[in-house]
View (cartoon, rainbow, N blue to C red):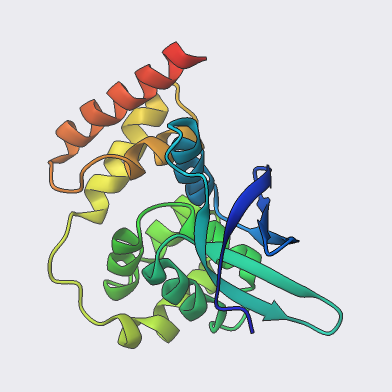
Length: 197
């Protein structure tokens, strides 16, 4: 099994990239969040090479590679795909919606409504995730309020931003501030994107 890869990115799409290492190009599926972090590094000229932790997913006739910049992302992804009914593509989509800390808080507090509203997965699947992962994750005693996260998301949507735009901006905002501070920071990020268009 392939556990990690380091090489040059020779092709990048919104769902996967081709990573060349040792003369071989590997197709690695990634989340939108990983893609944006890689794009920033490439644009700044810092990343000549990229390193990924890899999950190798083997089915009857397919061998797929999923890449993560951090080990905690890989570990959480592997926990998600062990939940019955969650495949690698669904797990990658769930990882792309918000920070791992927020996802863990939603699971540990049993907040299925957060999982369904934000990720678009069904209620039964959200309940399965909570039931099967709550004990593995444990209690999340610290951290920001999920209601605050939902309020910030709704506020940005009411200002005309799409759910995806709002989620992407909120993922880049510090978790320490209150809801109003987080909305203001997200608006600055969204305003910067609008200028860059």
